[in-house]
Length: 404
Image (cartoon, rainbow, N blue to C red; front, side):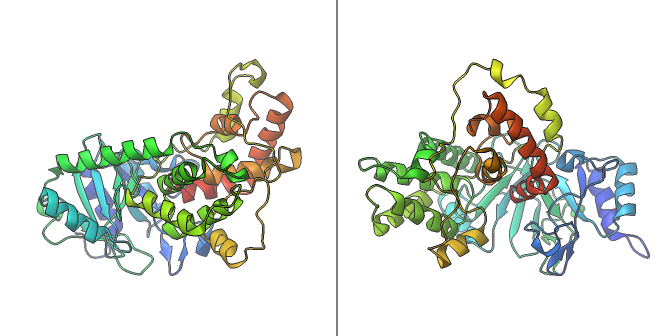
């Protein structure tokens, strides 16, 4: 497609748009770095949207089929990777991860239920597979619903050919499954929909009743077995790698009263991973966090029970990244900082919440779960913490880590 001095990336972006698939300009890998402001520290190099306050202000929600806008983007960023917003306006995606055991898992599932139907399919820059299907509204954005398998649907996005991968390889359409050859999207197999629905229900059941604050303070004898298993399921549900969850779970097990046996804790971890519970759905992206706070009702007028994080100084925060986990494992004497509700710790507690929260990603939820929603003085300090977090890039970092 294209030729001469034409920008091949632009040509493909326009072709996708003509098919009715909403296109978004993404950042570009630069060797081991990324074209975004975080450079080599970026954890989603070449996979997240560009930003411009006028021409691309809303991340994935700015995806469009408008030719003029698309030309403007690639005029500004000629080497931008191409993203397509997944879901009802384009397609659903089954992501078969090469790094994990996605191919083996899919082979086992196909042996049980039959082969996936022929459909549009691409080979990612890392060598993985991504199979596209007619959007069905039933599979959602699920992380590891089975070992090595993810899905993308409404609210998600996928990088498409001929975008550049950090490895230096290009994304490409599988030879027999290229949409340019008029290959059509197939429907999602019923067995795949049923599998995803079953694992979502299992994850919901296993994660119900998890009181993180009490767990971090130390689980009392008599409930350690059940609570550690549920907590392991919660970590799995959040999309953590198994080694990351292992470090966290062993730290929690050591805090139990009395300490929970390490071998038994590892068995709980193995049980949680057996079911491959899915991760949380990507929350809607918002850049107007401070304006959103102003839309909220007066916290003092709210007469409802909220879940607050304990101010017991013995409660320790979770490691926030895989790097933090590695450090915690390597240096067990390096105790993690404790939760408190003092004004000097609002920013730190909010930072922890950003990295570990479940559910809807907004400030109202944060204020409730941190216990700062009904107290006017707490809430005022919380607003200041949000402002500082925004200025320090913490909100942007957390959004990136959650795939926004």
